[in-house]
Every structure is written in structure tokens, then in C-alpha cells.
Image 1 (cartoon, rainbow, N blue to C red):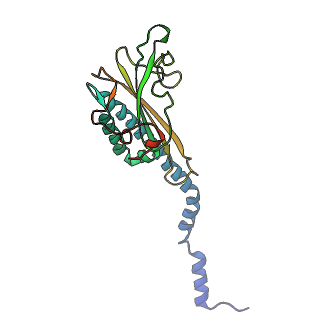
Image 2: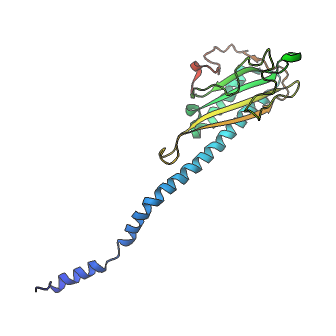
Image 3: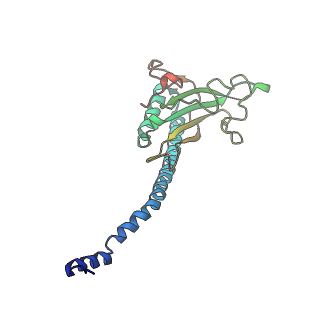
Length: 225
């Protein structure tokens, strides 16, 4: 029987006793399980942050429209919507979302027709959706909005002799990495503020903006800018 040369035998023994790659092998095996868990955690955290930012955007939108005093003009609305686009850049709200602002006030009717109406609506964003709670003119001649607007069981309505700003934001959340960890989610935020120091809710157009320049809510005005 031929025995290996001492140098060869020594090399084989060193190879058998070598443990330098064990840690790397163990890490590779653990990574198979840890990577999906880590990425899922990152996606869940990002979804939570995005939801928070969306709620903040909705609150800012409703508050800023409610703060306009005396009277409100198309220019005022455009300024607020420009601010929404700027504030929502970090989540690409303009490209993936839609802000729908509605003014709700008493319809001026009496008797059985007394209620509330949606006086006007303006929008911003490229997401092609309409309001879940009504369109301009709804409730103007009947009591269909007497209970207010909003989700069933949680409707809100303006106080007497005042008006309500309803900001409804719809947004498509897209995962950072892959839909394998968290699917695309449709987010919806609703915030409202009472109008302050503005008796007339009619939307004026003192600078004669064209329809193309207004923030109308039709499909021709789906824009991320």
C-alpha cells in the first residue's frame, strides 16, 4: 500500500481540519430565510410611513382650503394643489394619487328637501378616480345628503351657516422591491375642516383661467403636475 508523501499528507490534514468557510456557509443558509423576512419588514415600514404621509397631505389640503378667507378663487385652489404636489413628491403622489376637494354646505331648501349639497369640486393627480361620496350638485334640490358626506356610519356635515371642506386622497402604493412581499395597495385618506371666515363658498375666477388651467375633476385633467 502506497502512502502519500509527507507534504501531501500534511496538506490533506490541513484541508480536513479547515473551518474557515463554515461561517460563510452558515451565513448563506441563514440568508435564505432572513432576506425575505427583512425585506417584508422594510416594505411594511415603508407602507406605514406612506400611509402617515398621505394622511398628513389630506389634512394639509383640507386645512388650507378652509383657511382662505372672504372668498375663494380658482387661483387659490391652484396654489393649494401645487402645494399638494410639492409636499407629496417623496411618494410621487402626483403620479400615483388623486386629491379630490369638495365644498359641502346647506342646500338652502326647506321642509322635506332640506339637506346639504356639494357646491363644487376640484382635483389634482394622475390617478383616474372620482369621489366616493358624491359629485358637484348632489343634494342641491333634495335631502339625499341630509346626513352629510363620508363613509356609511361615519358621515360628517357642516354646521349651520357654515361649510365643510372634504379632502379625499386616493393613492396606489407600489412596493419598493417586489409585490412578492407586499402587494400593491390602494390607500384612501379622508380629512375635513370647517371653513373659517368665508361666508360665500362660490368659486370665483377673477383671473379668467381657462378650463385647461383649472383643477377640474374630469378625465382631461389627469396630471401629475
